Length: 521
Ligand SMILES: *[C@@H]1O[C@H](CO)[C@@H](O)[C@H](O)[C@H]1NC(C)=O
Ligand SMILES: *[C@@H]1O[C@H](CO)[C@@H](O)[C@H](O)[C@H]1NC(C)=O
Ligand SMILES: *[C@@H]1O[C@H](CO)[C@@H](O)[C@H](O)[C@H]1NC(C)=O
Ligand SMILES: *[C@@H]1O[C@H](CO)[C@@H](O)[C@H](O)[C@H]1NC(C)=O
Ligand SMILES: *[C@@H]1O[C@H](CO)[C@@H](O)[C@H](O)[C@H]1NC(C)=O
Image 1 (cartoon, helix red, strand yellow):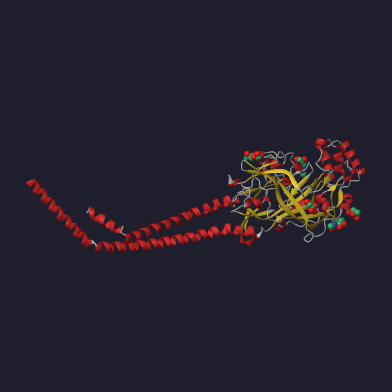
Image 2: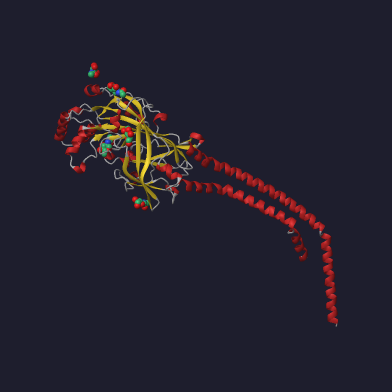
């Protein structure tokens, strides 16, 4: 019996059958590979993406990060006050006319990049703004009439000071002929003009408390290399920290607000790149110094970017600038309140040398309607035009398109003893709003991204189908053949086996005979 089975297997392993065993093994390998592809391919692709996007000096991703291949544009819309005299002398409601856009093309570059040993990079952000005449509504030297921010800041701040100080202030302003509204060009309003009050402050105020400049402009000093030193994680060691701020001027937190969480800077992004593998539940954070806080953005909807690249639209929650009554979490941003900022406003006074500057979205989007109706001439907000959003490629964390829209407002307080502003009521006066926009990435990046986002999925499906089909087909064919062949061979050799078996028995009989013969001897 034992010998027979041995023979059977020796036949199976004969050259011809061995081939079929090999085919079966091969088909099983294909099926196993198919299973591995089904469950492991995405993981492998993600590992490759993580490796590729991480910021390694000399790498492609690093180059794009250091000198983004995009042409961002800033569009500025100024609220030109058309009834300044009536407003001041007759108590009329202020009337503004929104004029814009005044367009500037930007170039971004990170300079003085230093690689730190702990997986971070430190750099200074350089931005250059070039006026784009063709796309602008007018010239940079168009004259507009806007509230005198340095003056109104000074008067509003003196509200609780001693009366004689206010009177002194009034006479100084009289001498210097400072008025509550200024006539300046758009270029001056943005990039700076010499302000008599700031100049005076520079001359009289002790060195330590001095404002850093004697010019006033809402974008003053921005057309240059920022002095702020930013340290971000490269993502080489931990991809979930990719592009995320570690330190800002050596600090991980601000000191302006009341809780650690609200003061946090660490974890923000400059808005160009985010840690990859973003889901619809991810909250991403953007940090911009003038915003004076991390701005949380949440998923709103799926969008399709240029070249058919899928993206997620992230936008601030409606509650982000909500009043503390509607969103108690915002209490931490109200160190001197209550009363705190009205609904839809964010008080950045602590980050603006105590000027009463409040930020909102353009046209007071998501804010209280009464704010908009306090002045005439501002149309109701429209989501398309005034929403703040970023479209992000979720797999790679790259920003495809962005519209960072912010409005700058001045909270003026009525101060009785300063005659120039005695008729200036308590009001939140809109000054201008701007949109920093990033549109299409260049074709080279788009193509790469399309490959990275669509090809792996298609490849995975194709591979799965190919492997399973081929594997199963081969398996069935080879098993069928094997069963048939071995069956045929079995019957073919059955006689032979019998013959061998009988021979074996004969031999045993002979041996037995001999043994018995020996015994009898
Ligand atoms: C702004 O308003 C003033 C006063 O009405 C007007 O003289 C000026 O031309 C306006 N500026 C622009 C750019 O329209
Ligand atoms: C001031 O208001 C009065 C009454 O409302 C109006 O008749 C007058 O024309 C206004 N004066 C100016 C300079 O607007
Ligand atoms: C990494 O190193 C930089 C430069 O030495 C330092 O400023 C930063 O705080 C360090 N960050 C961490 C997380 O250790
Ligand atoms: C910004 O600076 C560049 C030179 O660095 C200059 O050519 C450009 O006109 C400046 N832009 C503005 C808006 O001042
Ligand atoms: C803004 O904040 C400053 C400083 O905390 C505070 O003095 C001021 O009253 C606030 N303004 C408004 C309108 O809430």
